[in-house]
Amino acid sequence: MTVNADLVALVPKLAGARIVCIGDLMLDRFVYGRAERISPEAPIPVLRIDREESMLGGAGNVVRNIVGLGGHVEFVSVVGQDAAGREVLGLVAGLEGVEPHLLVERDRATTIKTRFVAGHQQMLRADSETSAPIAASTAEDAARLVTQAMKDCGVVVLSDYAKGVLLPEQIAAIVKAAKAAKRIVIVDPKGRDYARYKGASILTPNRRELADATGLPAEGDKGVELAARRLLKTTGAEAIVVTRGAEGMSIVPAKGKVEHLPALAREVFDVSGAGDTVIATLATALAGGLSLLDAARLASVAASVVVAKLGTAVAYSADLVRALRHDDIAVSENKFVTDAQAVDQVAVWRRQGLRVGFTNGCFDLLHPGHVSLIAQARSACDRLVVGLNSDASIKRLKGESRPVQGEAARAAVLASLGQVDLVVVFAEDTPIKLIKALKPEILVKGADYTKDKVVGAREVEGWGGKVVLAKLVEGQSTTATIRKIGR
Image: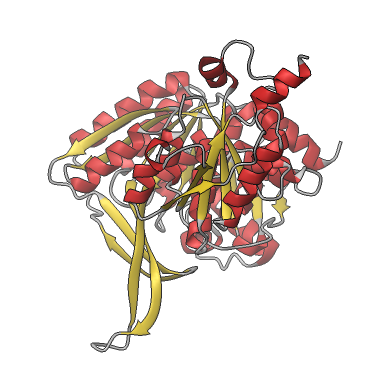
């Protein structure tokens, strides 16, 4: 088997891995628009805002990536009793596979990072935050929660953004408890003094952070190895994993061979959160029983996935498989995605200024009427997402004898059509939940419907979208086809 094939075979081991994560939780906001003129008040561009998006940042992005890879997270953090804190709590609650243990401090301000983006270019980042340490009692509660959670978790992640959630005494208590329980502790470090992380298993600084922490230039393979070995000596860590941007990644263990992995990204749109993806993948892979080298190889692939996306992105396990098999995988397989992957991809298209269309149906025994509907839908938008009824929902709607073809077969046939950009299976009787998640600009159904009967029409028009009723091809239906076959 090739190295990539070996890694593909390891990806399923990430599913169900259990991790406890503690760190600085924040809200990442992205304000998208167009900068078409200069302000008459000052020599600065004027951003005409089109839309805004909010997502979990900091340790929250680490958690998003872990669950995207199929892991389960016990998440410990602290937020303020403010509007941003309430928004963060809601976003965490919406993540599957996360058991939140979020402490609230009345007088603390929840960190908000707001990025203003024109086209593909980030114009400005504005931070509203406090870096004051959390109260000693809160730190003790957080350490206790982590210690309790690690009983059922193989790896402990410390995501330190230097916003005051991780205190030296608290870190020491967590590391001590983890050692006693024989758990792996992985730290995404900040600052110059890494003595606070003494005893942790693995540290994951980037090249600049490594240079700042050691006082060494950390240039080139040899320079990185020399600086990492100094860090190993001062912290007692078992390994240093150094992210080096375009130069890839280096794994320097206290014992064993040093490995330098090349960068894999073919396109780089946005490096926001790439470090979160690396530590999340390392943690999930190690909790799944992989070696450090294999975990680092998967982390390198995951990083290449997220930097090719815009915004604070997530690498899903399916993304890893596609990236590892990109030369061999069928194009149609790339199109068959989960609803979470579809939301991410639609966000990317929207940032590129593309109009997203949506249509849905059972598509059992694809016929010319289906093909015509899809062609008309695709001509009305730049990218088309097809919502596909699951087998169970079709049985509820059409009876036990349907569908004729299972959802995997129906999805494969749809994905093979050039006009279809994504296929998403939905289990509900209607696609309204999926429509609300994707927020398409164009919603297409056959002209046998009236607009008031189209599911999602009111919502789509409510956010400024358009409903299109496609012309029908006479005499074409799956039911009619089945009758002919039964003659």
